[in-house]
Image (cartoon, rainbow, N blue to C red):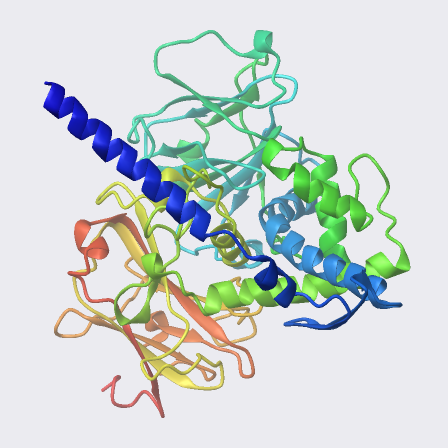
Length: 515
């Protein structure tokens, strides 16, 4: 025993010595310290040259450095604010579009024009969108048994739970109680069987409910929904979208910051965001005060929005996170390794994700566990691709053929939807031959299938070849586009690369494929 204790002591003592040696060797010498910054002279940086005079910023340099700080912070604040701005604009748009709209109200979205302002919306399912507020009482959502695919999100697009088919009750209905940071304890219902309680970090909460079925089935199912605050009579209020355009994607220029100002004033400040709130204050945006930036601040904010959006575009269209890159240069929109695609609660062990959240919030909207965790048969899978098989960007003036291999591994449905690169929304081809159509998939009426079970999707600026209308999407010259492929109830083959993802090839015309 004594020998064993001596050995343990020797090992521990050696490790302490080694740690001390490593720590000592990491110390910077005085010579190295002096070498890296002149006392008097020029400092060369990526952002330009700056002069020091006896270690003081030289005359005129301080203002340049303050401007640099402001511009850097503004671009990062743009990335930080993307999720909140998107959700705030959505809520504001509904308030402006519909006089009868309010909290605990769902908007029925079924038409092309109602969808085309929402980031990467689909055309296959009937949507029900709505906001609620937990500040005065817990929000209660009652889901009937049936084919609902939905989720609960807060205003930062963090999701505590799915609801419906991929939710904890597996499509058998149930009651969801949502509690916010300011919900009074006496306004939370007592626990009950079949009731699930979810906590969110913002006062307001958002619901996405996708109903699958015939028009009659969807109408009957949605009538059984319930959305109300604790203490109120269980009820549901659904209003028609009226084919009104609703812009949910983030505005540009100073309007982005004005919308962010609305968002932070309507919400609580999370502990993790307090440093960012200081940055905003230094740029003239402060909670509880009017939006009145100085002329200097306005210029910085406008430039920061441009640079920030360039960063967001780069994160989306030049993805470099290996955890989400898949076969044939497709990319997992959500999923991948935890935190790389995007995680539904945006939290890792030692940090909260930043770039993945900004990337996803710029190109799409809302998350949920079933969207971010690859659970075969119990999840939605989304993949995107931004170039053809030769690595060239997808342009609306060219013709393309997307080949979809047979037996797409999806239990509910699959689809490929075409989006505009600039807005990240449905391609606006309402003036085209189809009068507004961006989708081809398993639920597309009249879809043509090849003899071997595969499918061709035809894309180009002209009207579709006769008889191929269902397989065709008309693109717009001088505008870029990109596809999302969705698989609802995605099987294991969609995640383990056993299913071959589609190819995209530029062609002169479609004659070879439409014989």
